Length: 279
Ligand code: ADP
Image 1 (cartoon, helix red, strand yellow):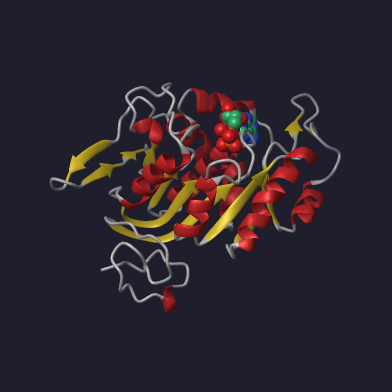
Image 2 (image 1 turned 60 degrees about the vertical axis):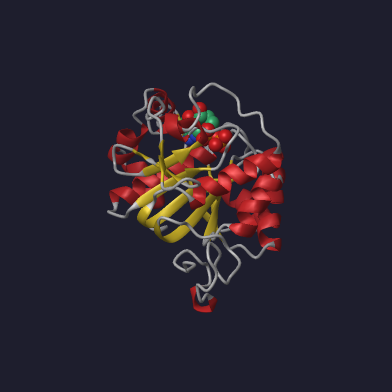
């Protein structure tokens, strides 16, 4: 039987088909997920994975059961963010033809699956054509032993390629959180992904403006680095509500490099404040 728990329109889903909800979305095979949230930017390097990680840590801190699917197959960074890049996700055979992925569990109990936890060495490239990537990603979603989750955060791939299209079309996304930086060129590219989501009737929660400012260590002032425009103006251009601004924070980058981002975020009220009211 199918499973409607992750269907964005539960009322119209009768779980009659196997592996696919009647709403046409794929279902997970092992467990139940209440909400699937996609974090998307359209452009690489703007902080999509960082925001995915911060969001996941905040939800876990609130007591929710959280999973993260690193859908950035060719540039996966979530294992490093959580400091679990030395670990490997196990594949367990269920029968002759089927296996399940056992996710890696982070320090705060977040279940993580990423291409970089499945290949032997994290710096090996994945040289696959789009359809193969799409197939593997779909399997990472459906065949991971997620168990019971309140939230699954999907760190979406950059761009509007066929992989993004597949996720938007087939995955039971409840809504998207959009990440951008205060640069007109970035906003223009992010706008493409916003328009794509709108065309596909996927709800967007709003915009997180990352790297919005840097705090001067001598004078404590917020200095703008990339643009004199406000985050509100960028949000208006994208037609989205502004959910919050994140500063450029060298301490965060260093915590990520040391595999201690989870602890840093938990102990830093700035990150709780921004994400507090979201979910
Ligand atoms: P994306 O997922 O959009 O490609 P990442 O989240 O991987 O981007 O971020 C790219 C790099 O920038 C990483 O090294 C990350 O640690 C750093 N970074 C992201 N956001 C911030 C921030 N607010 N302050 C400092 N460094 C950041």
